[in-house]
Length: 74
Image (cartoon, rainbow, N blue to C red; front, side, top):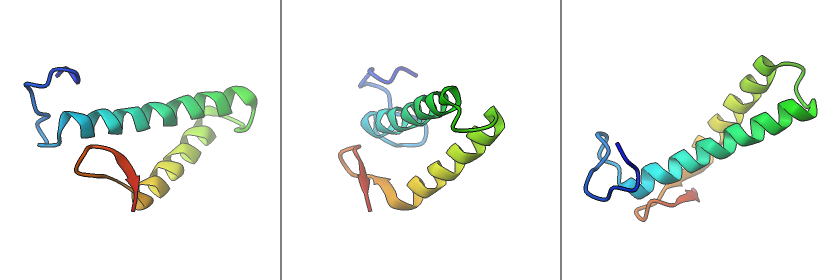
């Protein structure tokens, strides 16, 4: 599936814009995690991953994708 191909919908039925917004969010989580591990904030990769999972869980309770495909606060 190509994100920028407007002729295809994701199998889940979400719009391409919603999927792209979600993937950008996930990408930023990984970028933050990589920087935090490199800086020594976490003692190990495993600790960093567990921390990031908790952060994503918090975001899932506070954020949603609006009808325009933007990630917004609830």
